[in-house]
Length: 399
Image (cartoon, rainbow, N blue to C red; front, top):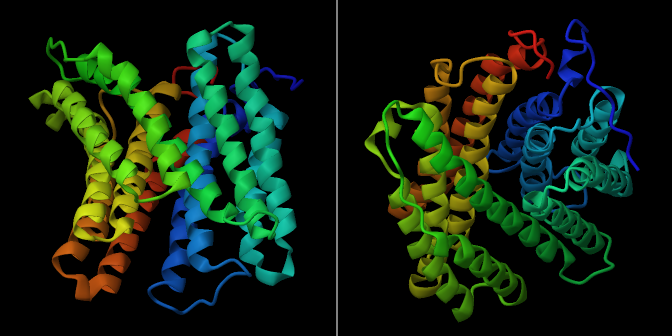
């Protein structure tokens, strides 16, 4: 069983190892810049050859899911589970080991053919195998039944990554596709679950006036079941009629939920509107799945609506908020730069999802513009937030 260490002293020079969100949010932000820069150099600029035997698009997809997104999830959960349970999560040397394994899995492929992919797989899967008990032990000890689903989600992500590598090494036919899409849609399901918990909560307490948002208890039971059906259908027979019907129902139901959460005050609060816009892009993703079946639009438009909204914009908004709260700063008075980093990522979504529909002949240009907006957004995040992540809390509290 993993031994959970006590946090380092706040006077320590290693404040970045006091709580899991610190190294993993730093790593996620910097890797978002590095990986997208490498991807842009490969496509559309074509000034860099493929990194290794993996097709570049496969590497890009895997690293956005199991690299960037999983780092944000790890950082968020290692901080949130401590709050949910009142029990410590890894810090110090154990946290450093977890982070080092994640980092190794991200950097080893960049060495090209010099380092076999087996070492990348070993680091990647060992990181995930250690992350699960790091999150599960406090949840189980605290008998936090509500959060047992988080353990199941991490186990499914580990399963998806195993399927991916089994496909890479030729052991499982279609393993690459199954691993990528299982991981991708499990993360979207996690975004929907956490969005349901935090978006109305943050909105009611953050708009600056009394408001009671509309929630539908029957949606809380229906949406998870529909997501299970959607994921199963996508894995077994992607883009078929069943997938389309389920996607259409999810579009309506999630749209109804989002309308119930709306209040005009969110548009004056960037840490609120970013979550609503991100959730709206997930809804758009399901709508574009329907459009792909009915009208023959590219299925990758839906993929990027999910990726830029549910993964990119939602995670950026959550990191911006969590960093403030867990470093003792005021979440109601965020740095002015957050508006610009959110708008840049919205620009990335506009360029990658909508502009190809309007002017498909300029597809490469729109992809490049989207990549540039993504990179600039995370560079801005790093400039503003990395100093907070590497220094002790301003209120002197542990964390």
